[in-house]
Length: 224
Image (cartoon, rainbow, N blue to C red):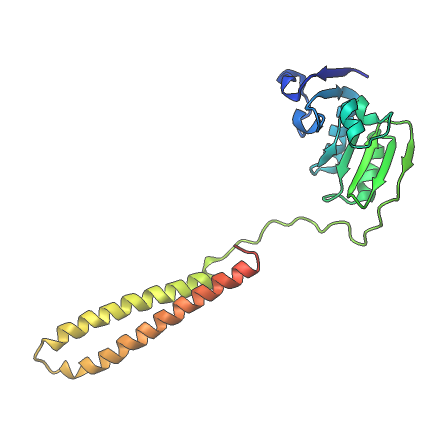
């Protein structure tokens, strides 16, 4: 199994990295930054990613001997050979993940349900730990977000009402001033315009209250 070793993951030439869904940084040792690349293991990891069709969150890949000791790894851990990966199960159904990992050629499996990850390596064939509990429903299908219709937005409605009423009240006040200076038969309408202005001001205040309530409610729901 061809293996490439570099003092730091930044030293890996771009042309030597052929696994599009992973970076050298996430495969490198978390303690030292050094990296050992087992090409067969990486090919199988990429095949697993392709088979599952969703991201693999790598919790641990290569470990330098000193870092392996620091985290309490097994003395002969496959992580030091760059043939093992610890993958988070937060976005995978463990049963589906394990079946896919076996299908692409991984042989060693370690179950860590309390820590939320599964260890996979190239073998020999073995397993340890308590299996993950069976989930009644693995994961709901990912649906595209529903298109938001602005005309149905409470924030837009409240803000629109407040704006329209404010403009209307200002217009009524101007008209009231104009009519007050005229000598015509429509002058008796001036007191009624004053009432209309106050009605529009009240509508504006209600619109502002609706807008504030909608924003607070959306914030509480985590929509903003």
